[in-house]
Length: 213
Image: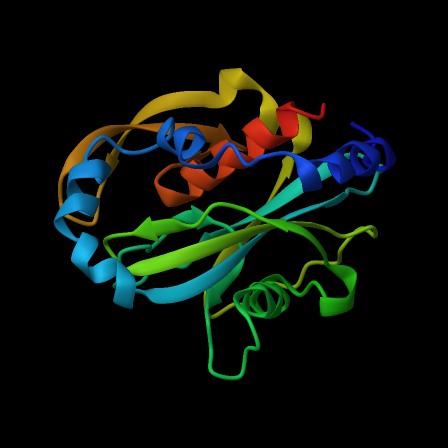
């Protein structure tokens, strides 16, 4: 879809009720509900983070969404696909500011190029005890991405067409942070398996967009 057309359509999401948790749960791993129930006492003190679902025009003015592949490291989100973003720092005035700042730090999109359109439904991540606030935003110019080599292995540019294509929702066997292999719902995007909290957030974004497209 041409980005100018996308911008006109996405402007309508401001007053639409969020699909919220029912949408997220469609892409939830099977063990998540039990795990969250077990750790619900931790949620009130969970670390806070903000992430950005950033749409933008590619070089031929078609709409794309950017994701990142994280570096391999000793941690629960090693080598996973996610949104640019990160934890709230004491210097951040808000979670939104943290998401914008981290987007700049991780993929090089300047603060003044990011228009935040709306916050989405928060997602609790039991393995890392983070409560993540996603935002949906746009850049009206084609970004020149600069990845943060310390944390980002690759920048993944997903076409809107591929993102909303239901054929790209699959079931995959993955290794979890608990050393157990399970079959989970996932997005197959550019050859990457996107599952867990990121897939749950993507599900809400997809359902929201489908209401205006």
